[in-house]
Image (tube, rainbow, N blue to C red; front, side, top):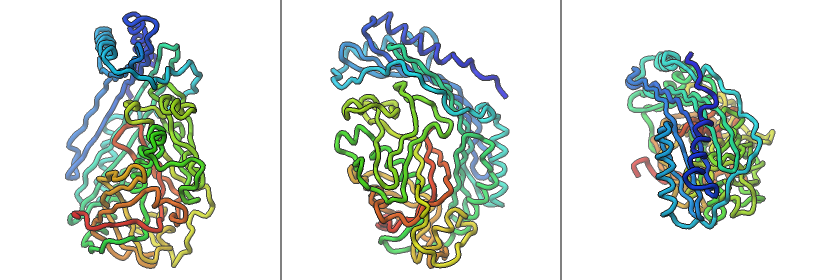
Length: 470
């Protein structure tokens, strides 16, 4: 195991940047700095062989300045004295040319912030062989099918400081595995993220991907229409991602571009949504240095809150919820660690039409949901989803990695991929959720430190508009 970096080094760099700003711009300049040291390691495989193992370590320094009523943010990757000075000088030059910023919310005052969740050191400093072992197990479990995917580990050490005297630091670590198995042109997928690499079992994931691939061959084509669906966690993660970015975004809500209406029963009573970064290995502060904590966005169907950074909170007359992200002045605050659960003991609302089916396609956590479906679809995954209407959050996209027809609670055969056009809030609206799985599967995102913890969902209807090529 490699030795850890010096715990205070990122905070030292952040403090140096603040001192440079005060020296070059004077004491009236407002500055905030985030320094992150990231160790990223990736073992990628294709054609059932590891073809790439890469690892990199880099610093990122983000500086936001507010001088004479103008605000500019910039970043760099050089942590030397010359590099930090160059970053401050070019940011100062840019802020003098920037537009006035009347909505500047000021800096986060000094605030005690408890440390985040403990970091698993074995994951933070995992060796290539440990990732390769999981890839080997995935390939072996696929039993001769062609496989591809990756196993990754990440370790980040971050520190924040501002010219108001506030400073804080934290560490995170994460592991993820995402792979497919291919059989006769059909793909099966299995993916999972965890705080500990030890919690990723390549053989379990490989067997699941291979079983789904074998069951997805020779698909039939179904006509467009509204079908009852059971969405597996990978598909549900896409719902959470879009609901978060476009719905529970405080800036979009203030601008009237969000569906969210706090205090209104906009979702089915079975649905509870919580953004909980500290339930897992997440940093205890956002890019403005605000303390992060669990925030309930939907409570038993009732929209309870939206996420805020300091800017959107000032506009709304409230306080930041710790959801500031890089580029948030333009995009807005985004909850990025959502968990969908149910607070009801009535997890499956519709009565079962027969015994629950399990097997290579039907995981135990989805079996109870399928048992009540008279005629519908089991959907593994969504991809290429795009927003058609941000206000109502109408999304178009495609199914991927396996769709199956379900009749009288039993998977009968594979279905060709379908295009859909659906309002995500409507699909989860009152009376539209027939069941919520008890088992949560943490789904990795393309951005490190972002994850979606999702169960399987049984929904009353999903609007499929044609074949995948349509």
